[in-house]
Length: 90
Length: 164
Image (tube, rainbow over all chains, first blue to last red; front, side):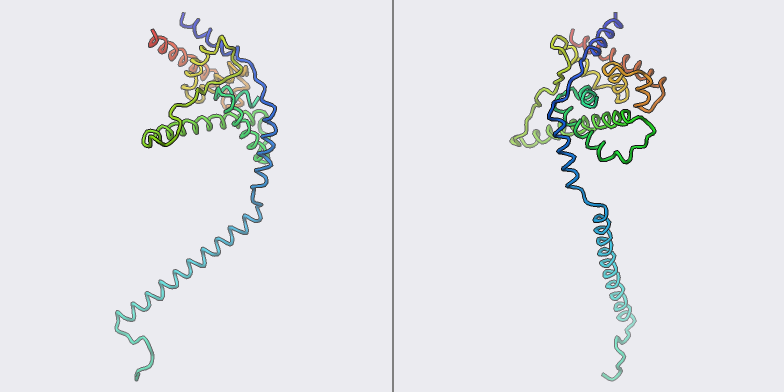
C-alpha cells in the first residue's frame, strides 16, 4: 500500500514534460557574454597595477620603518645623557 | 538540457532562465579550463547542478534576510510574503497540486539524494550516466536513489498523517 503510493508519486514525476526555453534567452546570454568581455581587465594591465600597488606599499613600509628607527636613536641619546652634537664649546 | 535541469531544481520558470544564463556565462569563461577527462555535456551538467544549488542557497539567504529586515523595520517597504514560487510549465494542470507537494518534500532531501532522484526520475538518465555526472560509482547512485525513495516515502506519509 505504502509502496504503491510512492510508485504513483514517482510516476507523476516521470510525466513531467520537457519545456522549451524562451527564444529571448539566447539573446540575453549573448548580451551577458559581451558585457562580461567589456568589463574584463586585461591580464597585462592587472599585473602592472598589482606591481605598482606592491611598490607603493613597500615604499610606505620603508618610510614608516625609517621613522621608527630614527625615533629609537633619539630616545637612546636622551636616556644615556649623551650630547646630541659634536661641538663641545657651544 | 540546461534549462530543463535547472527548472527541475528550482521549479520556477524565471529562476531557471536566470540559472541558464549563469551556466552559459560560466561555460564561456571557463572553457579553457575544461580538461577532456569527461564529456562536455557531463561538465555542463555539473555546472548546472552547482549553479542551481547556489541559486537555491542564495534565495534562502535572501528570504531569511528579508524576513529579518521586515521584522525589525516595519516600514522597510519589503514584500513580507513572497509570491508563490512554484511555477513549472512542464507539469499538467491536473497533477500540479500533487507534484507541488512532492517537490516540497524532494527539496528537503539531502542535496545528493535530490540530484540522483531528479536525474533518474525526471531527466531519465541511466545509473551509469548519473554516476559520471556526480562523479561516484553506480552502486553509490543506486543507494542514493533508494535512500531518496525511502526518505520521500516517510515524508509523504508524515504529511498525510498530519493532514488527517
